[in-house]
Amino acid sequence: MSSTGKRSRDDFESSDDETATTKRYKTTMENMADELLCPITTELPVDPVTAEDGRTYERSEMEKLILYQGKNLRSPVTNQLMGPRLSPAYQVRNIIEMLMKSGMISGDRMGKWRQGMSDTADVKAMTKKAENGDTDAMYNLSYWYDFGKKGLAIDFNKAYKWCKKAASNNNVRGMAAAGWHLIKGRGVALGLAEGMALMGMAAQGGSDFAAYFLGVCFNDGLCGLPKSAEWAKFWLQKVVGGNCNIRHLSQMGHEKARKSLIQMEVEDFDDSDWKEDEIIVDL
Image (cartoon, rainbow, N blue to C red; front, side, top):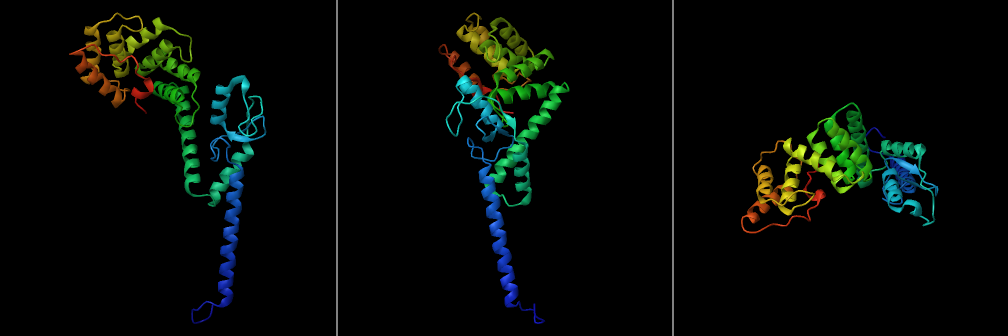
């Protein structure tokens, strides 16, 4: 640069060369990232695995596919039959992490990858708490596996495992969840008697979800309970009146309970088609 502060022609040419080099480098990095995308999610995998077709996928997505297709598992890329073995793709994960740290990958792609990494860290931390005896953590893991939260594949077996463990350690929400699994035979052999016993204990312990469930069952004579408007009102009023101190029923569930009580004044209500994923509160 000259003494007058003006930039020379060589300065501008050098700057232009640096800009062009940076753009080429960024394009190369983005193209490299495209080669690492999971064929199922079209996103960079947080927990990459190599399947038997030689392709790299997001672990949770392949686990869902394996669970769904079973012995008829086919490659999402070639549609050819393949086995269920998954191998950790450590090198792919390291490359993705380096790409992110380079600053050459940005925008929505980086945001989703970071969210995935955050979810993975949450699951790891929650699992450690659960393994160390935290019963609320056990219930939270059960919920995440039940509804595929935090990037986890839906796994009813693992969901029941954790809520049953929470229930065995006197966690009221765990009792309600374990009771539900047994009543539905979800992740465990059908066990109506044990399930209803757990649901009753949870309701007595202050679970608004269990109280709502019992209200529905007494009103419609479900799950081995006699049809009783008196007992239906008893449990639903606990929900609506805010007398349950363990709250894991969603606002939708509370609204259903309120409307059911109103309807009971004029006619029998039918709430037998309720769905747990609509009324259990998201944590």
